[in-house]
Length: 90
Image (cartoon, rainbow, N blue to C red; front, side):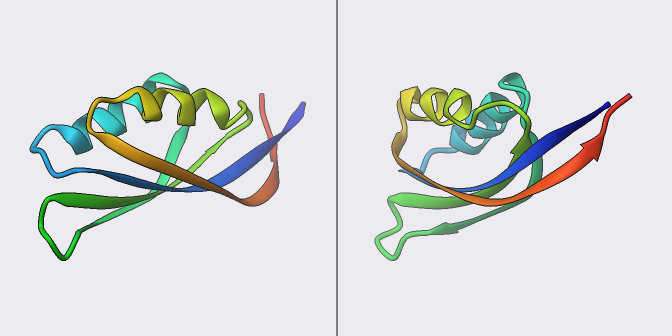
């Protein structure tokens, strides 16, 4: 059996708090997405973080972005579909 794995690039702008990255990663895991790449940078003012995530799943990415947007410290989530890969499952 094969299924199509979609890969998405997400840019998440959030308030700079010690627990915010842990919350982002927990939502990714709970929503069934595989984290392929992660990076973050502080804003020039030092009050915000810009996190870049590369995730993949055969699930709709809206399941993830909707939940990320609900997080208290998240300001904005931008998504971009990166690629489709056929993966053999089973």
